[in-house]
Image 1 (cartoon, rainbow, N blue to C red):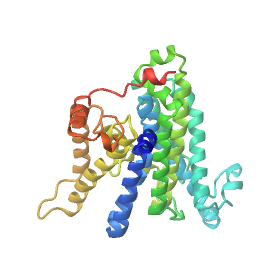
Image 2: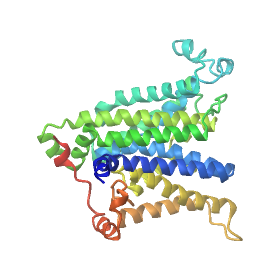
Image 3: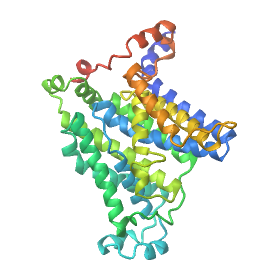
Image 4: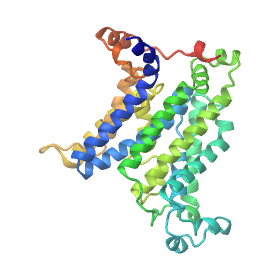
Length: 371
């Protein structure tokens, strides 16, 4: 008993990420063992969107600044990774007008999947580093407009710079190297990264600024610096998701990373984070699973119907909007209340009632983390 009491504090710390990782592994095992091609494709999408949501959680969840522009990092990661892995013979006749200063090293390049993923994420990180200075000084509506502007800038660049991105034409020759297992591994890694950052000193200081910016500044927290670190780290995470996305779907274009009528990755990932509870890593995972199940259920109902009943096109998006509104009204802090998964020894009906009663409150960390 004494030994168990000694290890319990450490076990409590690592319990949430380990339990979440176990959920992902169980999902992979069930789908890989019993699911057909459709279920495997849905599971890959689930893990890809989860990586994006985790990137959003690292910045928006800890800073309280909602970003509409993180998919720009995804686009950069996808395009850069594709350019570095497309066979040189295909690039030579596809990118005839590419500027010589780029073509001299991009056209002959043929990186491995891991190298290309890290390279694409690295360029996304560099873009995050360049844009960090103006973005981290914004908050509220201004931050939403500023991050949305970044998304539009990248989208317009992808559309107009046909010599580098092929414009509105889809990419061709991109090797399909992303597998179910590789997406799972990256998702597991980033669950650990997101949780470690949240529990780090920088994460604690950033959460303190989320709760009360003035109080955090009064005790020496450099809010802009802490936000910049989270912004750059999240850029890397979402950049990896973009590279994985590009090498899974193979053919993609600018509309895949912007507002569209189908799989709207921009709004869907934000809904997942908000519905699950943006202030916790658990909320990011729960929101991703919850929204994916609802969205896929109604999308398949639209396509396959149920007996003689088939809802009109767009029903899935309509239901997501209703879910978001109900969540904001009934549980402003999301399904999880913005809290991490509780230690099993603390599970009880009384604790669930207390959690429900406190669901309108936030995760106050200003006092503990501003030091």
